[in-house]
Length: 196
Image 1: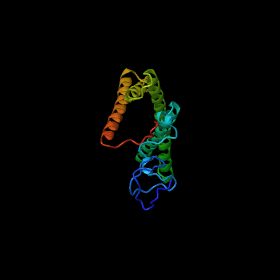
Image 2: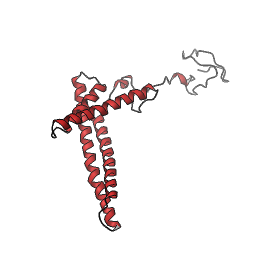
Image 3: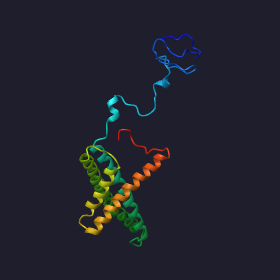
């Protein structure tokens, strides 16, 4: 595999490997080929069939539920902190700190649990709609799942809250997908794994 001249002035094709070699390019010391030919850009997979794999329902569901719960816990805790600081109970510092902590622990888990349940319903409905549509995975599944999630979540409150919650769910999903398309049209991409 010795190409003869080690000074970087190589012929355009290595007769031993049939790989083209650029003049002046640094060669791999182990294979005597130009390493730029090995990296064609894009995602790399161990097996060619890996490029077609998708995350399973369980993987998507648990990541969605965990993220939603943690975000809800943080938002509810912030809300409780604001309430506790705005209306402190007691005259001493210890009682005021206790009031703030009570507000955080009252609002945080409640809001986190609500968002976790919404994420569970959304992921389940998104997968179900995709299966009913013959395995399609697109924004229509997401908007439909968000609409149904909002409607089911408020199903015991009456017709008007059901319609409002369904509209809010559809609006959030539509805004997300329109924002994603706008972001992608500007040459950016949302950082998601290639197998998602």
